[in-house]
Image (cartoon, rainbow, N blue to C red; front, top):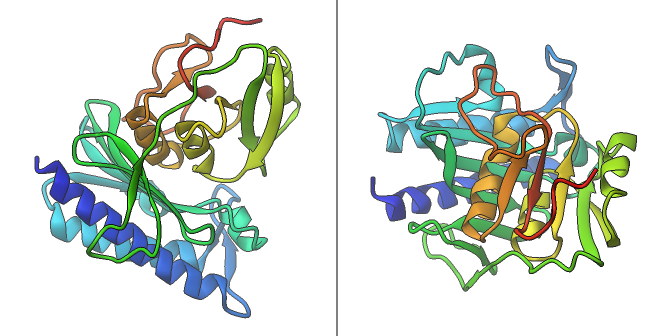
Length: 265
């Protein structure tokens, strides 16, 4: 596979989807409905999904595609696939808090190896290069010509003064109990897959998630974190989080820089 060409396409589609999302975000009103699982969906989710899906199917017709908005139609029996959350952080979008992202990733043999995370309301763009290394690009974000790219890398954690990032919309007592096992210097909240990216840049040391997520929520951020030297581990057995699971549902996990003792009880 030509990974450089792949990432050019993923980057461009994420930026194009971000433009469409922001048009709706900045409008006076937008439609919000409930899906079959009672989670919210907006016209921005659907517009971004249509744009990204069409682009990926045109550019990569031989690679299986999984998207959140079409998940009920998927019958995946492959280890390599593209996976998309066209608008991660719909609740943040609805409440106009800005912490939402466009996520597109490539999964190979159960591992997210390439990905892009774009936060259009925050003007932050993270992705892997063709070689898998992670960067953050500074705007303005031209669709065809990347701007200044800065390599990103996870922190070297100080076990006595850890920085943690947790969900803005889904933080609960179980999450706080887990965080309290550690010596935490400071804690911040963020929405969507931005939490992976904050660990990837060293702005946080770890991100625990003790709640429901799906593979499309995590794959792109996971790829960026991998490319920055981080890791995502299941909490039940501390094995790497794998993809291509039958229902696309993730177990509880922690996204982290290496060097934190995850066996703490």
